[in-house]
Amino acid sequence: MTNYLKTCFRVDEVSGWKISERIQLRPRIRMKTPTKPCATSRAASARSWEYRFKACTVNIMLRPNLPTINDQEGSAVPADLPEIIDAHVHIFPPDIFSSIWQWFDEHAWHIRYQLETSQVFEFLLSRGINHIIALQYAHKPGIADKLNRYMARECQKYPKQITGMATIFPGENNSENILKEAFALGLGGLKLHAHVQGFDMNADHMNLLYNICQSSNKPIIMHVGREPKSEAYPCDPYKICSAEKLERVLQNFSKLRICVPHFGFDEIVAYKKLIEKYDNLWLDTTMILSGYFPIKDTIELDSFRIDRVMYGSDFPNIPYAWDRELKWLKASGLSQENVDWILNKSASSFLELG
Image (cartoon, rainbow, N blue to C red; front, side):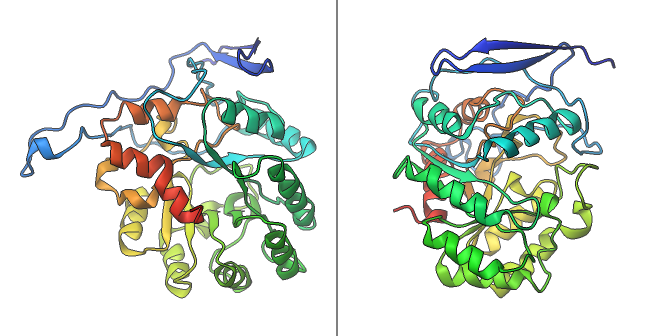
């Protein structure tokens, strides 16, 4: 099917910033409306509505010309939601952000919100997000120290509202000092991305990073799910990422708190079992609740260990409205307690925000 795209700009009503939009003039990916479950052996009155969506099983990867969804966005978080910690927000210096926008344009989707760091923070905080976990990753050796100092400076402008995570390029020289200095600057943990950085989480040199984080009581957010993969990445995620590999890390570093983004996509069932087995593992919801990617598994959030599931948006690097997954959570029929865990308590526990 031919893609018909139209790029336009609009002025954001709250911030006044100009935001680019690429309108997709083809059938859009839509989420299945939540439905009430059939009666089972458990009393129906004891269950919330099932929060689920299904999609066909396809060969999933990032590829050029993925659709941009021109859905309507709200000017504030949906009413009646608890306090919200967004545990997956990206910031970078302007030159790297610009390169990321270009990469996504060429290899995935058009990023709807092309904002600089201060605009990212102001956008979310002004709309009612209570706390942000800010992430970045070093895509090559030699830049981690610069990125960590940038992260620390930007987060200091928003005391008690932003927790910044450090980065390191696994295996680079002086890794120990770079990471320890980042923690001394006040950064709250470590962010790693196996697809971009090309590391095997079971490689010997990774133990140094795990040991530093564990001894410093600093958690790791580590993208080690196999999807969404891209032929433009420097490695094949299916060769270096798996739930089985992560389980070895969880066993060897039992006091190290780890979060795997995107529900560990595409091994969602395997990661669901891991959070039931290990107290030091969390998952985040990033992009999986949006209905954007075809998912081979049915996700029923009320069957997950909810105290190990935390909300993340992937803002600003998304192809749809910033509040899409918040709206879906509000409409999910999950109990207020479970929504509170997903939007607040799980991330607060992971980061020990107090």
